[in-house]
Image (tube, rainbow, N blue to C red; front, side, top):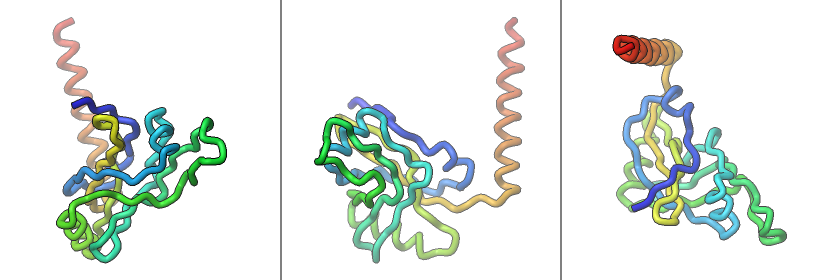
Length: 152
């Protein structure tokens, strides 16, 4: 199995507490998969909408137009259907109805030539949680720096 990460949402772990992750396929057009393979995708502003426990959609993900597709090109920010099992879609829908829970994409990757998106159930962090995360990260970095300096 060959896996190549194409795009990551680096702010997701900073802005949200990740509760659970899921792997989903995407329904794409030909020019979209070619742009993804070229690394021309951004999921910074993207989010997932679940409709009545029946379908999941990836919204506001920007896949750049593919130059060689000319008039057969795609709309860069069109909604894209996510392929998940029925139980997973229902679980996402059930969790989203709770207060403060959302579904966000964390990364897009190619697995055996197929585009997959990792989505996560997440709860937004408060400002003090973000500060605590930054302080913990800095402490871990300082410890690693001290450990590496001991060996000269």
